[in-house]
Length: 221
Ligand SMILES: *Cc1c(COP(=O)(O)O)cnc(C)c1O
Image (cartoon, rainbow, N blue to C red; front, side):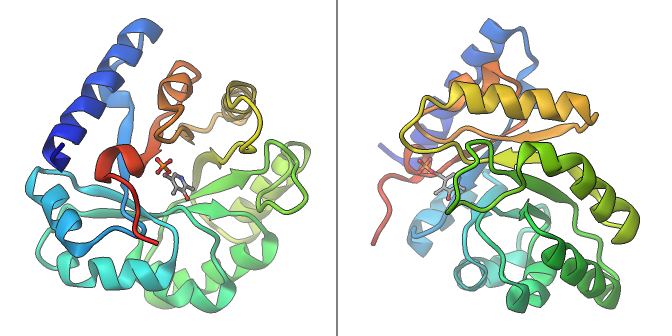
């Protein structure tokens, strides 16, 4: 299957899931997750019109995208992996959204870097919906305070929430929780759902779905 076919196939499934859920398909944005994919496949994705991409690592994202940034003016890159404070400078330069805002130290570092660069990059707060000890993210019960901190203390633009459910649990409960929190705090963007579960995420209110394997094929190790 070509990437063009994969993309059309995914879009059909998005449309069908939206029809079932009574949603407008334009309310769901497909993020093509290009981590560990070849430059050739990335070019194929660009050639068939894809402009929204997700990357896990700042360094890898640079090598994938720095040359495309000038050519494709409508290109949008989202950081969907953990961000170390020593990479904040590069992240603010490259990305159009940071989906993994997950601690106060990072919020402060982002604030000062965005001020330096005169560049406001909107963020999503990563929620640790499964409250897993090894996983990044804010606990649901700490979100209110964290939102206040990011907005009032750091002047960050927080547009919504993202989650990565625990691998060994059905994702629907986590999607439902993220959706509930989005509504509670009147947040408009909800990033959840991957290749294996994006239809469930759409049914539960996802506005960004992050698709890697189904879009590009299996990743190179
Ligand atoms: C890799 C990754 C994805 C894409 O996963 P697939 O199962 O290949 O669709 C989505 N979200 C995050 C945070 C990822 O790291």
